[in-house]
Each structure stands twice: as C-alpha cells, then as structure tokens.
Image (cartoon, rainbow, N blue to C red; front, side):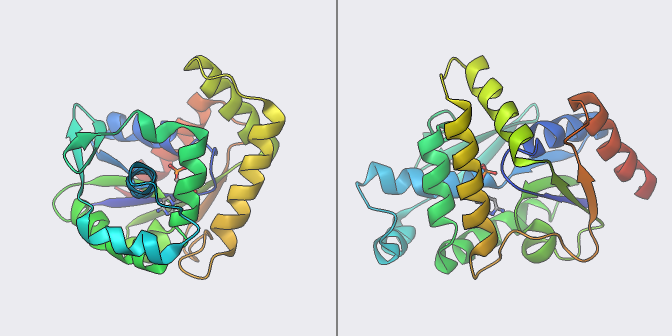
Length: 220
Ligand code: DC
C-alpha cells in the first residue's frame, strides 16, 4: 500500500489538487478536514458552544462519523445523515478549526483516519497527516501558497457555488485559521521534516496537479 500525505494551510488547493491527482493515479482521496467539520456540525446541531471544550468532548461518545466513497467522491455521514454540503460554509470552517484544537477530538479521529490507509492506496489531505496520522507515509507533501492568493481562490470558489463572500473577510478568516491551526499545542500545522514543500502561489491548478503527480510517480 502507498500512502501520500498532503498537508498545508487552508485554501492552498489541497483538496482540489489531491482529488485530481488521486483520480489520475487511481488512489482513494481522503479529505480529513471533513471529519473535523463533522464534529463541529455535531456541536452546532446540539447547540453546543465550541469554545467550551468540555462540552465538545462530552458529545464525542454519541457522535458517529463515517466516510463513504463512490466514484472517488467522498461523502460524510454524521449520525446516519449525509452532511457533506452543510459542513462547507465559512462558519463551519471556523467551528472546525476551533474543535480541531481539542486533543480529545484529534485522538477520537486518529484511528478512523489511519484505518483508511490500511487497505488501499490513499492520498490523504489535512494538517498533521505527515507528522502524526501517517508518519510512515511513503510520500509527504506540504502544499502552501500566500494568504492573499488563497483568499482570492477561496472567494472565487465560494462565488462559483453561489455563496457571496467578501475578499477581505475571507482573507482575515484565512489568517485567523492559519494562526489557530499553527499555534495549537496538539498536532499543529507544520511541514514534516521529510516533506517536499510545494508553493502553488504562482502555479495554475493544472501545473499544481502535474507537480504533485510527478512527485508521486517518481516514487512509485
Ligand atoms: O481542510 P479543512 O479546511 O476542511 O479543515 C477544517 C479544519 O480542520 C481546519 O481549520 C483545521 C482542521 N484540520 C486539522 O486540524 N487536521 C486535519 N488533518 C484536517 C483539518
């Protein structure tokens, strides 16, 4: 089995690039951010304030999260309900970032994430895949881009989905999330020592996908 870990900050293009690279190479693409988003959604559904980590931890035992994969498309099932669409709002992004700093939440999701890499070739994207989840991954990539270009892409992505978003709001959210994700004590966002850093600021999507698939193919 081959595991490819792709980590990096929000909006660097990890999910789009990973999905395309996985489809080209016949690997399963696992988006781990969706798991943190699902925990955030579980809290929202129950009216729990995520800044109260004790309350968040309490609901974990009654939270069941499954990922299903159909034709390379990942769906997120929270307590039997498909929440794939509702976990994509900017509010859900911020909630996910807050719950992801809670050590018990990270521990809760660890086994689930590792189980995906046991029986198939995976490209798994997240923040701590190369450092914590799959430290023995054959290939580790840290995908990054300037905050401005990430905000610009995110704003356009949201607009394409019919969600109006202001560039400056998106930029300040990205900077805040970068700070949250990099400064937390447990599994902070950082490149693994043995990762290859790819900066997509000046690359098109097509060039980025090629860069990633070339790196993977060279190691197969
Ligand atoms: O990749 P994303 O934007 O869907 O991730 C949502 C949040 O989850 C993000 O702010 C950080 C967190 N996350 C994490 O801490 N570890 C991961 N492996 C994936 C996501």
